[in-house]
Length: 87
Image (cartoon, rainbow, N blue to C red; front, side, top):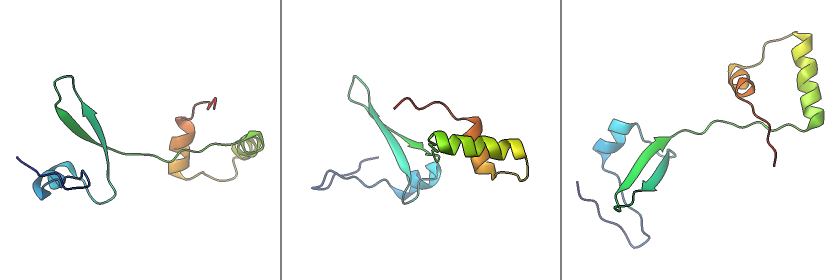
């Protein structure tokens, strides 16, 4: 399939490809180029990242210990996948 680059360096992905890959306005794509110059686009998803300072971590610990309410599912997923941010 041939596409044409415009003067801004943009290309339009044909609707059939967008539909097959589930790409919609606002979708993110990972672009890579191999040693032979082939260009690859991969759809990617971003998930919310939560960063807490010491005070926020303490409040979160208190909330966990109290077990008075259930956290939203998206928060539970983030918490379970949390890592220490050394930055």
